[in-house]
Image (cartoon, rainbow, N blue to C red):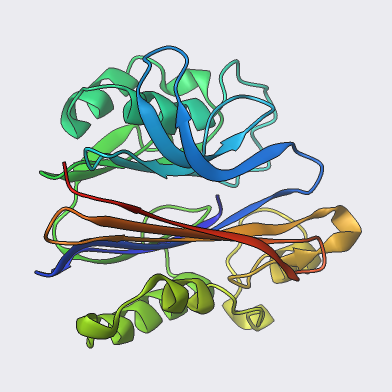
Length: 260
């Protein structure tokens, strides 16, 4: 997962609204979004699944738990870490710790994962934690963006995404998952003057600057877009749109989980 734009308690009708793109190697085996049972806990999770390591990049549960992860881009970190970042989301979704408790437990394992940003939340709170700063924050209401730097880093695709989501939230009665997926389809690249400096070659930085990434020469790009809307009633709407290596739409899936 490489770009997440989300609104938390920005409108009383919709406590959480999320639009996200997952960018990954095309060859990495992946299961599309669906309900599956976690083998360790027996709890059900609605999410896509990384079939190589067993975790997920973004998911929810019927009870209203939410988790999503992105990597922190740092080419100087070359040491292989023993655990997959997808476990960070899976274990929260499958468990029963509060977001605050879960983030506190993560302090014992920061060095077991490559660089990550993690969002975990339930009906009471939403927390952000990363293992670069080794700290967790309880988020206040607002509109946020998260990619491969830190939360709300001023990257063009983050700034633009927050602006678009802010506009969508101005007419919340018209808010739907299709509009969220459409906003993540922006393939325009930032000008060189606006590119972040994450320590990689500028040509690659340029290709990674768009919300929707097309980079078939490196067999890498946006594999799916996900839209998530939590309603005040407790109902949850979840949609995923998948893409091929040329950025063409393939399969799409939509789910509605009623309040418990």
